[in-house]
Amino acid sequence: PMAAGNHSDLKICGPEEDWYSVWLEQGQYGQLTLTFDPYLDGMLELEVYDPDGVLIRQAEWMPSYEIGTFAHAVISGTYFFRVKAKYPGVIPYTANMNIGLR
Image (cartoon, rainbow, N blue to C red; front, top):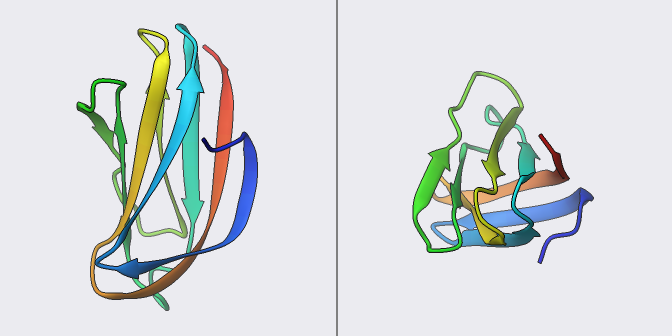
């Protein structure tokens, strides 16, 4: 499971995927923000899945150095964040996980 906080020195090698999980109690949210350089290194995509493995949200890319999405726990359980490279290549990134109540 991914702990709350900043996680640096991460890399993804497309077409591989990185998966992160977080346990959320009902009513909590988990927000994952990725920081990377889309102009120098390439594009990342970010999705979040509920405890049943159903895709519940995809991050929308904006022309910036961050992409993020969140899960709001309707039920308690393990939520999954999937990071993937849009194109082949090595993409370094930093991930920041926030967990809280809404």
